[in-house]
Image 1 (cartoon, rainbow, N blue to C red):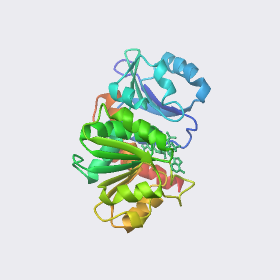
Image 2: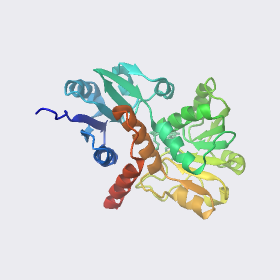
Image 3: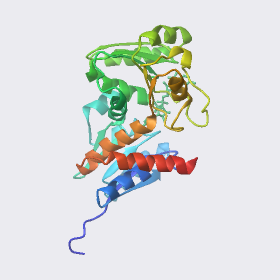
Image 4: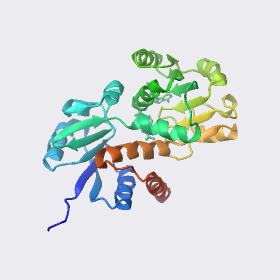
Length: 286
Ligand code: NAP
C-alpha cells in the first residue's frame, strides 16, 4: 500500500522471559510517539542463541533487548560493540543498522539517570556498591567518568577486587573492592553518600531479605536498589525508616529502556509514559 511504512520489529530475548515488563513499556512508548514499531518477548534458551539470532536477522529484526542468560554470549555474534559495552563485557541492547548488528549496554546509564533524579551531582560523592555481577559491572563502568570514590563490596571477595582492578584504568575518581561482610559494611557506610544494591538480594520471592538494615543508614544517604520486583524492596523500606533518600530499580529499568529506544528510533523516549506502563504492569501482577 502506497505511503504505508513497514512495521519495525523489536524484541526482548532471554530465558525466562514471560515476566518481562519490556513489551508493555516499549509498546506504550512507540504508541505515544505514533511510531510504526512493535515489540515482543521471545524465549531463547541458552544453547539456542546463535540459531535464534540467525532467524532474527532473517526476519529483519530492528532492535533487541538482551537479558539473562545471553548478555555476555551474544557479544560473539555481533558485528560491532560500543566501547562502554566492551568495558562492561556485556550487551543489553542491539540495533540492526543496515544489516549490521551493533551492541550497546544501557544498564549503567539507566541506573545513573535514576540516581541523578534524587542526587543531581555525583562528583566527589562516596559510593558503596554491593555486588560485582552484571548489573554492578554496568553501573561501575558508567560511574567511571563521574569522579566518585567507589567501594565495591561483594559476597565473593575476589570478584570485588577483580572488578575494582579492571576499573582502575578508566576511573576518574578512586575505586577499591573488598569482601562484603558486617565489618566492611560498618566501616564503609558511615562515610557514604550513596549506597547501591546491585545484587539480587531482596528480589521476589525473597522479599524479606536485605543486606543492610536501618541501623547502618542515616538521613541524607541516597539508597538505590537495582532490584525492581518488588518496587519497594526491604532495603528501600529500611532506608526510608532511617530517613534516607530512596531510588527504586524500576526507574533504572525505564531509563535503560529509554536509552535503547533512542538508539532504535533516534527519538527521545517518552519516559513518563514508560514509567506509567511499568507501574500499571506491576500493579496488574500483584
Ligand atoms: P548476576 O550477574 O548474577 O550477579 C549477582 C550478584 O548478586 C553477585 O554479585 C552475587 O555475589 C550477588 N549475590 C547473590 N546472592 C547473594 C547473597 N545471598 N548475598 C550477597 N550477595 C549475593 O546478576 P545481575 O544481572 O547483576 O543482577 C543483579 C540484580 O540486578 C537482579 O536483581 C536484577 O534483576 C537486577 N537488575 C536490574 C536492572 C534494572 O533495570 N533495574 C537491570 C539489570 C539487573 P557473588 O559474586 O558472591 O555470587
